[in-house]
Amino acid sequence: MLDFGFMARCVPLFVKAAELTVKLAFWGIVMSTVLGLICALIRYWKIPVLQRLIGVYIELARNTPLMIQLFFLYYGLPRLGLLLEGTTCAIAGLTFLGGAYMAEAFRGGLNAVGRSQIEVGMSIGLKPSQILRHVVLPQALAVSLPVLTATAIFLIKETSVFSIVALPDLMYVAKDLLKEGHSTESNILLVLSYLVIILPVSLIFGWLERRVRFAGFGY
Amino acid sequence: MKESDQTIIKIHDLHKRFDQTEVLKGIDLDVHQGEVIVIIGPSGCGKSTLLRCLNGLEPINSGTIELNGQIITDPGTDWSQVRQKIGMVFQNYELFPHLNVLDNILLGPTKVQGRQRSEAKAEAESWLDRVELLNKADSYPRQLSGGQKQRVAIVRALCMSPEVMLFDEVTASLDPEMVREVLDVMLSLAKGGLTMLIVTHEMAFARAVADQVIFMDRGLVVEANEPEAFFSNPETERARRFLNIFQFEGVHKVQESL
Image (cartoon, rainbow over all chains, first blue to last red; front, side, top):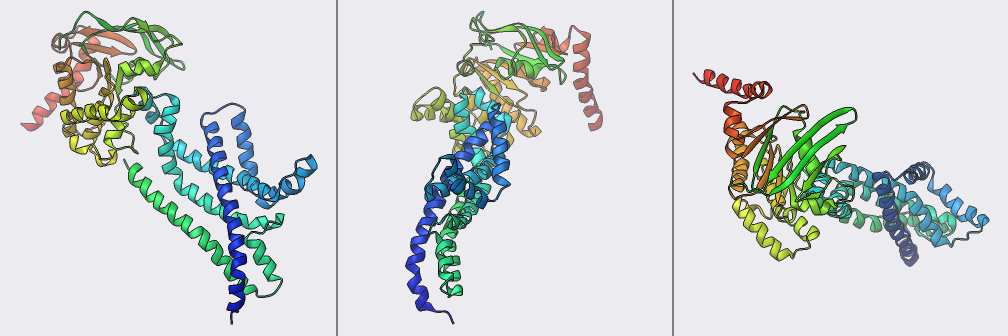
């Protein structure tokens, strides 16, 4: 039999932890998106040297576990004289990981916009920056959106690793409660908390996908 | 279809290479105000490349192109400016799939020319009305037929008020019954005095619309003449053989129907 009294007492703890998880995930996703877009554009424009560096970064970030990346940021950087606070460290780590995935997501979208679309933009006198903004990016975003959504959700779930840098996020709180017993109750609360955070995100992005598909696809 | 003496475009000794292959081997051509020039020739003869060079979509190797006396093949050319004067329509329409018909048309006038949306919209609507697509202003490209898309693409180029329009095989991707509606629009533009360079395989249309027919083969202008003279009595053997291809098809169909 579940101890509902215990669960009720724990809810405020989980709410507080969820706030932190949401905050970390939000900034991680925002920064990842910005970093990913910049990286994708550098590769799209084939900017010499930089595109090589970004290729290396993407492989490094995608092929190593976030936990190791966090260890490096949290325990390694201070030895180089750079001391990062826990939250900064977590957001930086999430951005490092997410930027690479976002870059790949954007790349697929950018490549899906044909050369002839750019040419017709040129032919009506649009400047390269206007072609990017009004012709290429809207179409690329529409194509990338499903992968961007998946990446965003993946990043929210990856925040569960942050307990290792002693941030009191959802996972941290749940692990703490495990020590006091009541493992089933705290596990249920943990799962519910993630669902409450992630489900709305899924629904919103799903709605967005249907909208841009109506406008953009199948011509 | 009256032409004046004023030369809008002057092409001199234009050469264009793709890697080792020379696609244009020294083209000379003058385009006068109000003139309709139809360029024909076998595929790979360089006619589409010539149009693309005029729109700055292909860098050239040597020679010059002048627009109203200004050499636009110089390195410092502001192509955004030039392209507002030389409009282009492509074979595959290339409407922006994420924008509706009206926004497709208004992107250039509002973003490039900085015109007021309301004023540009009035012009766009009057053009759409003229090509019988006003009721499609809010539709997305995917909701249109090929012929409708191409008419929108023509209006999109026209709304930049270009001095010259380039048409690159604009009916080549269309089903036969849609070819006519696009050609009719072009005929009416020609009658209105618009200067046009048209690359096409529609011979009957070429004969009807052209002030001058240019026959190209292997990167050179082989023959340039008035349409009646060219089609009824081509001067060169190469042009004769090319026209015979279409002639044979005509005879064949007549026999079949007997």
